[in-house]
Amino acid sequence: MALDVQHLRKQVELPGGPLTILHDISFRIAPGDTVAIVGASGSGKSTLLSLLAGLDTASGGCVLLAGQDLSTLDEDGRARVRGEAVGFVFQSFQLLPSLTALENVMLPLELRGDADPETPARQILEQVGLGGRLGHYPRQLSGGEQQRVALARAFVTGPRVLFADEPTGNLDQHTGAAIIELLFDLNASRGTTLVLVTHDEGLAARCGHSLRLDAGKLVGA
Image (cartoon, rainbow, N blue to C red; front, top):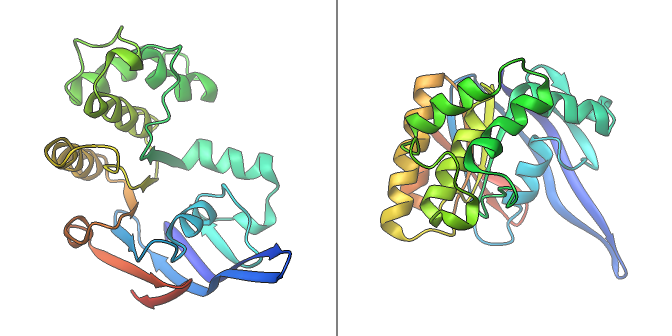
C-alpha cells in the first residue's frame, strides 16, 4: 500500500475543552491510485492531508506512508520519509522568491544530495513548457507559470506519493484547467500515487475514487 490509515484521530485542546477535528478515519490507497479528498470547508480535509504527509502528528491511530509508520518516528524521521517518498503542490505555490525557476526545482535534489541536480530539473521544466523561463524569478512569472514550476519541483524527485492541496485555488478557470491536465499527465507518466484535496467536484470525478469528509468523519470512500 502507498498509504494505510488506521483509526486516525486528531484532537486539539481549546480553552473551552478538547475539539476533535478528525474522528476514527481508516482507509487504504494502492500504489498508482488517484484519490480526491472532498468535503465542505472546515470538514478536516487539509488536516487529514497534513497527517497523511507527516507534517502534523495524530492524537490517535496511525498512518503508514510508503511502508513507514509515521507515529513511530520523530520529526527528523518524518522529514526523511517526506524527502525520500513525497512531493507537494500547494495552492499558494510556495516557491522561494530569491531563487530562479531552475533553482527552485533543483533545490529538493540538492537537499537530497544528488550529484547532478541541474539536468533533471532542466528536463522537467522543459516538460512543463517552461524551457524558456529557467532564469526567471517567481515575481517574473504568471500564476500559472509559478504553479508549473511547483509541479516540476514536486515531481522532479520521483516521489511515490504526491499530495496536492487545492492546486488550482489561486488560478483562473482556464489556467487551472491547464494545470490539472499537466498534473494528471505527469502523474500518469511517472506512476505516482496522487492524493488531492479539492472542493471541485468535477476535479474529484477525474480521480480513481474519492474520500468524503463531513465534520471530521469519513462518510464516503
